[in-house]
Image 1 (tube, helix red, strand yellow):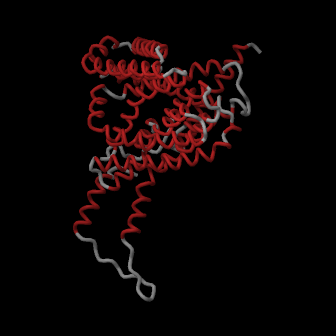
Image 2: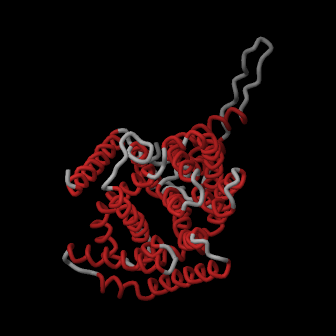
Image 3: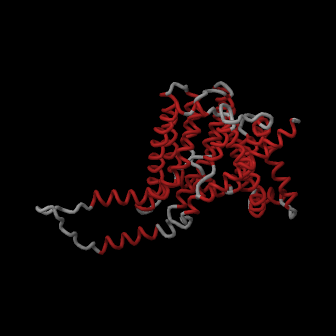
Length: 423
């Protein structure tokens, strides 16, 4: 059979399969990311039916997927939003980084993978999944809850941190020395700062230049500009993803809304291809040896994310119930953990890092929606048991507790206000 025909059959089967998996995930109301990863494992190296002619195109599609993920993320925020979040929420961002990056770094060192792999795995365990968390908040009806702005602020700070973290990782993976790495980081910070400054002062003019009433022209200009800037950024070893993120931040208003609407289907398509591509490059037989470390890391970082959300919500004056909900919601890892691990896999620094990251994300992308739903009721049940023990009578019965004081009733009402709309 002709190569082009084989390519069309293989790639068509991939897209069709992804669509069916997405439908299946939607029917059961969970993220399709684990299904996409499993599909890649099934058709990659050591899988059921390794792909041949379409693999190169899938690799290019995966790069575009990463660029579009970061572009769409940038379109969600304005430069003023980011500056405001940095000023008011940076302590929560620092706590988040310390509690959740450290376990990944320690695990890599304990496994003997070296400092570069430690930096990479620290990023994998640090970054929550914005996409999965946004979907969970919508599904549980919590978008109007008092703790939701705290959750979103932490996610914004994590996303903004990528503008600093990704250039560092890129330089380390490229084997750059201290001087070259410092130069790369300085360039990245300078470019990010310059883009933020331009976006704050001249964002309207940039958006006006890009704007078009014709959806086709708007799509072509925004997509072309993003790919161009991403390519230049990668050539400078700043990271294509950071370049795309900065383009998204620079656009605002109606242009950002229009571009978001037009690019969302493309983002979904190429992001799905990216997850498949990551799975294709992971041998299923390499996962069982790292399953135990991945599970241990998932348990530890689930607890540290809960602690992060609890602390940040407490700092914002949210009641105890809202604090537990904030912590449980932040547990899910997903797209950006895979993006970071994908950089290391491509560079070939540690063969076991990709399988561990795959197993880790599979665990937490499934566990995340469950912790979002059940952390608060479980914590409430445990704390009530520990605080309100009923004294036993001599015959084994219990003495009925007195009716709650008026202050307790008022406090419960205030807590319930935080739970408006929550499941």
